[in-house]
Length: 161
Image (tube, rainbow, N blue to C red; front, side):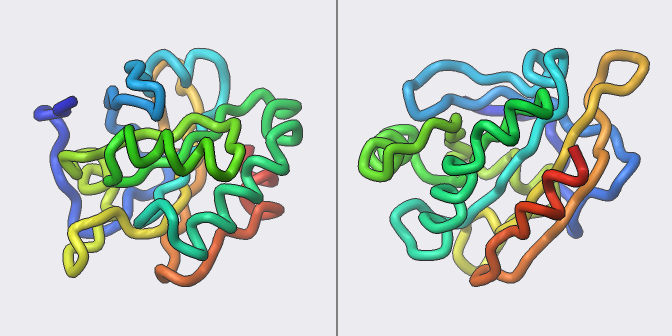
């Protein structure tokens, strides 16, 4: 799925920015739209480089284990990588993940959020919390870009939602 209207950023998106809207295929090949999700509450976008790697697997398993905590705060948590939906499906099934995983195969979304790792042509590691602004659009509430080997601190992210 292409998101041709998205404009790439050279650095991570900042708090207060309008969140670039997008639609991607999830691991079940269904369309997932940020605009639809943000209507229901905060959205936590968890960008990660590659499925089936140690840190990414640990991070997404932790998201999965804390799924009830995310839901109790009315937030939706999704993982985003440049892997295919088929790879994400196999990975989710192998780890028993409940959260939605999105395939940014054209790299347009990670670039629009300034979370692109050009050396490997994949998403870098980062987390973006998006809330609905008064006009009904997504607005960046919290953002963190991390080194590839550093997983997110869940307490920090939960405090932001």
